[in-house]
Length: 84
Image (cartoon, rainbow, N blue to C red; front, side, top):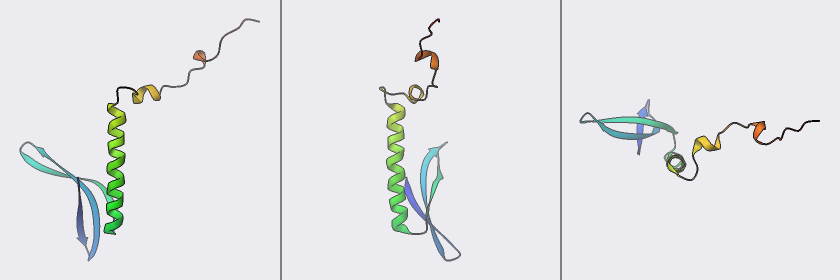
C-alpha cells in the first residue's frame, strides 16, 4: 500500500492505495481518503496499516476465532432449572 496525492482545483488530497495484478494487468484500488495534510495522511496510513495487521492476526489466530467470541448469550448455559 502507498500514499497517492491528487491535485484538484489547486488543492492537494491524499489517498491510501493498493495495487494488485489481475489477469496480467495492474489494478489500483483506493482504500481510504487520508485528508489534505501530508503529515496527517502519513499518520492515518500508519494507523490504518497497524489496525489491518491486527485484524488479519485475529482472523488467522488458531487460539481465538472471531465466531467463538461473538456467540450469542444463552441463559440456559448459565442458569440451572430448579423445581419448587
